[in-house]
Length: 165
Image (tube, rainbow, N blue to C red):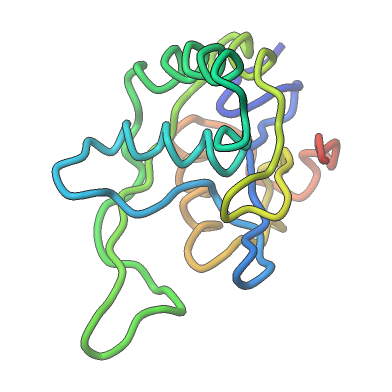
């Protein structure tokens, strides 16, 4: 098995959500609350958008929380921090972001999480990392940076074996 940077197979993959607002595929994420650590934001948003945590029972939420804690308590790799081109930008207000990568080395954590779209996401699936990947706003560029930093593949022949819902 190869490296598991958001992977489930020998291909390098990333989990993507289909945004309800514009119908485009994107990296899971959201707005950071004042004083909140980015790891807490990402854990919450990932649970809500990719695992439908808001609709789970208390027992299911506890199980999810355990798996998410394993993933999001790890050291993360900061991919980009700062201004981004975004369709919501105006002359007077603009988006700044911090894009980070969490690396599931063995694939064990992700294998124990069942994808289920929720909250702002209409669909969720695994997509292969390659140069044909088209994601919302600057998200494709972030994935390219992940591939470069993790020494993963970034070419159109990296396969199309996606795990989708």
